[in-house]
Amino acid sequence: MSERERIVVVGGGFAGLELVKRLDKRRFDVTLVDRNNFHSFPPLFYQIASSGLDPGSISFPFRREMRKGKVKGARFRMGEVSSVDVVNRTVMTQYETVPFDRLVIAAGTTNNFFGMTELYKRVFTLKSTSEAIRCRNEILDRLERASVCRETEQRRRLLSFVVVGGGPTGVEVAGAIGEMKRYILQREYPDIPKEDLTITIVEGTDRLLRTMSENASREAEEYLGHLMVDVKLQKLMKSYENNIVTFSDGEELYSEMVIWTAGVTGEPFSIVGADVTRGPGNRFVTDVYNRVKGLDGVYAVGDIAYMTDDVYQHGHPQMAQVAIQQARLLARHLNAGGFIEPFRYKDKGSMATVGRNRAVADLKHIHLYGRPAWITWMFVHLISILGMRNKLTVLINWIWAYCTYTTSLRLLLHPTKYPLRSRWGEK
Ligand SMILES: Cc1cc2nc3c(=O)[nH]c(=O)nc-3n(C[C@H](O)[C@H](O)[C@H](O)COP(=O)(O)OP(=O)(O)OC[C@H]3O[C@@H](n4cnc5c(N)ncnc54)[C@H](O)[C@@H]3O)c2cc1C
Figure (tube, rainbow, N blue to C red):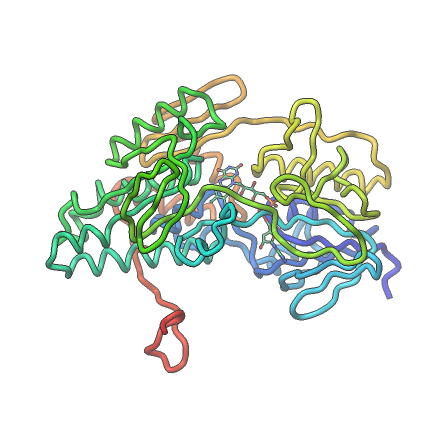
């Protein structure tokens, strides 16, 4: 039996993995639990969806990570945590019960459909690698079907894409489909006239990228226009039924493929043995040391933590840098055995890209647009991806795509089940 205190970390995203790396394994018996057996890189999910990158190049197996460097000495368990028992100090997955002395919740967020309960069955989402692959398959499938479709109206219906949500993810995925229309369609799908593919991005507020500067919003809108993406602002989606998107002002829009990027909510799982009310966005309310209020020895970091201070009175932005910085500080406190320094987010800025050579970046002391922003965006993302092989693969893909306007990744790989000819999800 180990004498060391057992720390279980739920979720191996930006926060969870960073924490596991930095915890002192001589002092703690560390176990990471994640529903996937790999760490993923959400900022580039939109490139999987648009066939710009292959999923393997932005994923990294936890078990390989556990063998080396700072992570060595930690353990990995694959499993989806359904509940946490804070009295018996255990975490339950579909496979096993994992005991802990201290627990760190780093499970991030999932899609928020704002009470539109049936929506998840009808729209496509980008909150995980699998969702991005599903999105990619649907786009490629639609392009193939449209290529053999003789009726213009039907072809246009097949290729009517709507992206809901004008944040960075929405803007990036709309831009990526716009790039497919502008640069790929004629080369690879010559039977589809360009004008038959339509992309509309819909945003509830009066500008895209509302967490960035007004200039960034304006530039992004202009870039999307260049890629033939129709931008609709101040449009709140109310429902999506029978391929009709209805907005709160009564306007309707036909779309056979809606990509939903409009909101997130904390990952749901139950806490047994204590009455814990989650905060705004279904996040765990913590103090400035990431300790979950009302739960002894339980911490929350990253997107799922709701921490306020005088600067961030409504919680911190749900971004990778917040997750990483919180994880680093919590690891320092746990290693030192005391909580002394309150968390202070050091904002390094934010950025979004809209196709080749076009991006916007609001950095700490400087705002960049166009090519300089795009190069900065590429550099920042490249250094953040885990694993040298992955960095190189992504770089080669980007260079290749930049020079040739194409990628070799537009493979439509349908998952199959026995007997091999029927596909998952088919009735
Ligand atoms: C499409 C997209 C694009 C983004 N782009 C940017 C960007 O450009 N810049 C930026 O700063 N941020 C971006 N973000 C936000 C950023 O990804 C998050 O802020 C960051 O991932 C939060 O880290 P986290 O560790 O809290 O959660 P995550 O990175 O989401 O990790 C959560 C982990 O928990 C696991 N998990 C969840 N529930 C369970 C469960 N019940 N049981 C077991 N495991 C579980 C998941 O598999 C995952 O590995 C983007 C997010 C998305 C979805």
